[in-house]
Length: 171
Image (cartoon, rainbow, N blue to C red; front, side, top):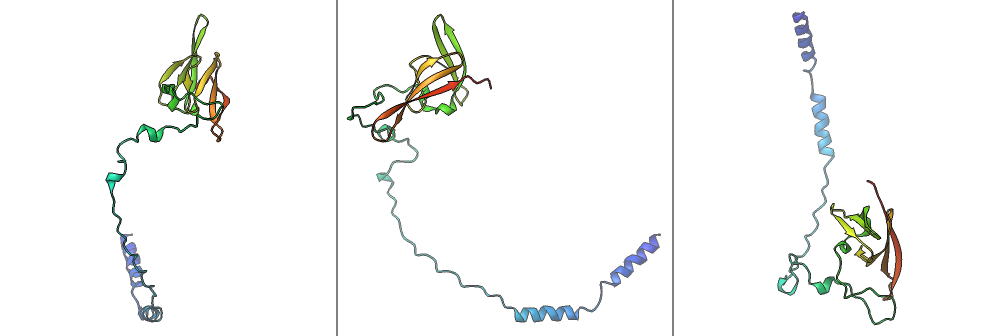
């Protein structure tokens, strides 16, 4: 059996050896007829020097000053305005979408909402406390939801009230 396989293998190798002159002629004529065209390179753009003067700019590694980040509110108009002198609460840096009501606590006639931020911290909030990015003040707390009144800028320097609800989630 081994001899038969060896004989078949030898004859199959003999078939690989042969006259390749027609193949070599085809390759040389194809190379002679088809010359590759390479377009010339585009001219390099002119270098323009830029003098960077970092002493005139704020360093990107230092937070901006408070005056640059505070909202500019026109208080000269006689309309609904947020209290600018009020100190911002800890939950006023979160959007309402990033806060979830997780439960309530109550004592006699007082009820508090348990609100979880997206970083996993849970806060106890009562009536009149603020949360959200738009000066949201808690108007009502029930065991099922928290009613929040937000102040939304109307674009003309005045603010309008919007009522939002945060419902209890059991996730």
